[in-house]
Image 1 (tube, protein in one colour):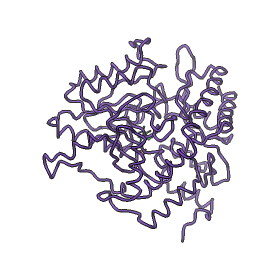
Image 2: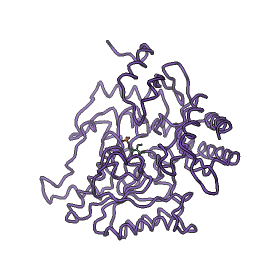
Image 3: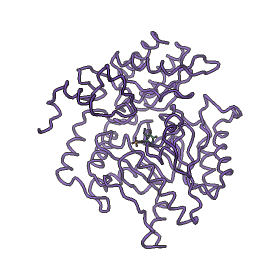
Image 4: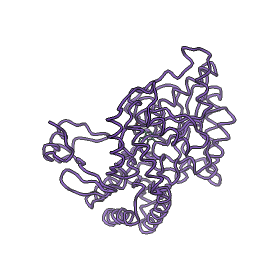
Length: 460
Ligand code: PMP
């Protein structure tokens, strides 16, 4: 059989999927009585399933990935040309798209200089953690190896990336975890800690990080790893004052600042990177999803020249360099797709569109909040939004998890795919998430919010 994306028996595909494919983060029991969804086509903001149903995708491939939208033939053409010219050689040597993309990428990241290629957000973060540990060996006698991460942030699915994740509901079945990863408190202004200084919550929340550093011993802390805006943990933007204080603290204790841009990177929030809204100067930046909008697997761990230089020192010719490889970091499809992806974002002025449509989306969600008491808080930046559903605005008690699920199902019936945070073991998991492609128009936003409005009118 020669595979052809247009010629298949939809019934056979759905049957094969049900019988043999293990879906991600999915309970399969319902598939005993109902067909799994199989997506067969995408175009712009829309996807179609094997049964011919059309959906407006408000979450860019379910997990905020397809930033430039579906069906971009120019990305596919560039990848095809690249693959038939030179598909793979390990990154022990260079290749054309990897070299060109690295330069283009760091040109949008003042202060950053080196790009290390791998294949997923988790892997990019693992590289960052290894860089921190090796620098600890090189410069601090192995002592400064700990990585701090924040409650509610997510950094990936592998055991160590999960060890650096602040979401109980994702972790609780997979311990024991990698030692050396230490949690700091979240910074969600809507749900402040009981002893918080509400007037100066951003600075207060950052000060809690300092407390953890002092408790652990600053000489043991190598890095602080943060999402610019917590994504899957509840769409949480750090409050005013937070980032300045975080940077002061990192400087004071000689701690590397690692920003995880896996979700926010490549335009999602209206700047190339989320951290650029806040004047942050990171030492390490990781990214994945939007780098090639899902047209090929690629992730990057980007560092300053200073971080990179530590691995050039000839203290030990055999051990001094970064002793790490990612086999498929040498696939050329990823950087070829990523180059065209970035060109599209520039040519179509998508950062501006994100700012404009993001404002509009926020405005419409704020209107919904006025209409429905059940919406406790609306959050986000650019085309990255979330709102929390609460039983009571005073107590902020989260709704039961069945409600966000029912709202998502109602929207799906209505032809709109929205997202929601994970199963509800605790507060924050009652958040509806929206992250449409950066090409979204006002009409798309209206269609998305109208679908949510209809769902809330019936279910809230
Ligand atoms: N970091 C963040 C902030 C993420 O949201 C994700 C994925 N949801 C990851 C890392 C892990 O990325 P991947 O699934 O590609 O390993």
